[in-house]
Every structure is written in C-alpha cells, then in structure tokens.
Amino acid sequence: MKPLTRTAATDSSDILSRPEDFVGQRVLITGEIADVCQKKGCWIDVVSDNEKIRVKVEDDVMVFSVTAKGEIGMVEGEVEKLELSEEELIEKKTRGRGKGREQFDPASVSKGTAIYRIKGSGAVVTDAG
Image (cartoon, rainbow, N blue to C red):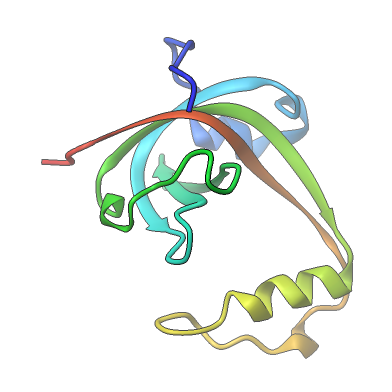
C-alpha cells in the first residue's frame, strides 16, 4: 500500500455523475465503508453523498479487514472503466449471489454495461465513532 498523496477529496457523486471525465485520473474519496470483500479483502464499497463506489485493490497487495465495514475510509486511486459483455455481467452478478445478497435472475440482463470503480493504491480506515 502506498501513502496517500492527494489532500483534497473528490465527491463520489461527481465521479459517478460524469465518470468519463474522471477515467484515468487519480482521486481521493472519503466515506463510510458499506461493504467489504468477505474472501480476500480485495475490495470495499465506499458511500458518500448517498452514492456508492467500489474500490478494488490488487489481491494480496492491500487487504481490507472485514471489520472495516461501518468505518470511515479515505481511499486514493485511479478511476477506471470496465466494459462488461452480457455474459461477463451475468457471470459477475451470479458470483455475487449468496449469503445475505439479493437473488439474481440472469434473464434480467439483455446487454453489457460499463462499470466505473477506483483502482485503489492507498487507504486509511478510521473509526466511525
């Protein structure tokens, strides 16, 4: 994990309202950690301004503790765009099913989509209290 270098945070709502403007840019976001990868700690969902954005880190390079859920995260990284085909999107949503997750009907997907997330390079997690 690299130290944080940005000092001014970007609102997640700004990123998600015009994601193409941010692709390839390094940003710092701050918000509540709403979810954490339960297997390897390789991603977190950060919520601020009522917007959720996924932060994905390289497996085993940086790991988020499952106890980070509910804490405050400051995360720095590069905004990236993933183009998913219809088949890739079905596979991704099917893999996400499981304990505590909503049911997914593969027939509900009729085309691919673009997903925007942050490729995390550094983070600081603090107690929400």
